[in-house]
Image 1 (cartoon, one colour):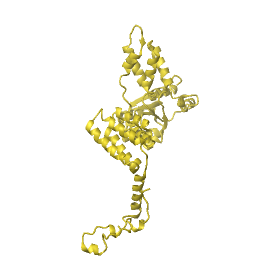
Image 2 (cartoon, rainbow, N blue to C red):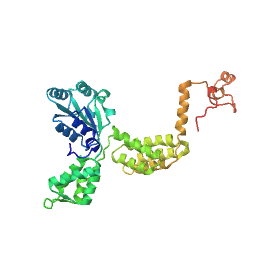
Image 3 (tube, helix red, strand yellow):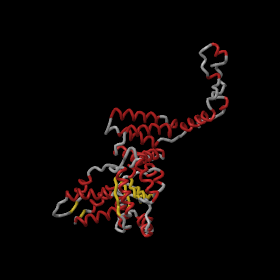
Image 4 (cartoon, rainbow, N blue to C red):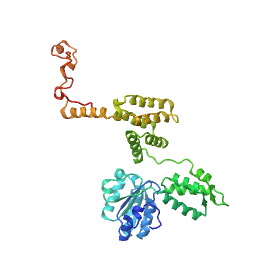
Length: 367
């Protein structure tokens, strides 16, 4: 375990996994962390430290048959069952595992990039210890880079090293795969890497973003909360992050239109007009220029004064309707299409009469 880079909170002298290994007992685990944080490497190191076989399954390509075969092996010899991308197992597949994990026949080590509370059945989740892995720090990545350079007998310019480490954004896999590309581009005689080779090897980085997964919700949440906090710089950053990752601009625009009414309302009525105009402008312009009206609207919304008066008023009125039902409408507000209705007082003008139902006289929804 000592040669693994990163995850000091788990692998340090007082880390949980260090203490579990020293104690000689590893429970079923769910390793939750971003790509390249070392989930697979950690499982491999645990199996070596505990002198157990590591049975590997990929949730993408394995089914119930493979799960049962792994269980039969586990019954005969101490083993860890490592399931990569376990969040891709459906409910039936997870249910097959559950009794064997409950009985201790299988010690499960699941690896996932998705929040387990969203993707793992509660019954299975309750029988596993969730360990959160962190993105590798720049110093962690630097150590990995030095190892790779030493193994391949290459040298690297300092400015190129900094660019390479920053481009990896905490992902060891990205760092090492970029190195492999750069080694192929370098001069085989000098065995030296410059900034030119590193930039060529990096190419255009694809941002980690899944429209149906946690990163999607985290990013749109950060965008909205940044506008709500009056921070146009952060709002612009998260907007660009979503757009560059391939998010549908219409989705973002819908959320901004909601924001214009929900968080600004009549304190600055032009916010709604501007944001709906941004949607129209995007439809006319398309990409790439269509990002500009989105950015214009996001910056405006972030800087605009905030008021929740509209949403508060509506939901206060809604609560009265839910609690009290459809109260009688005052006579002077009712429609009077017939003479009989007029004779009963429907629709008679009464400027001094209250417009709310009698039971709600004096109620104030709008602040």
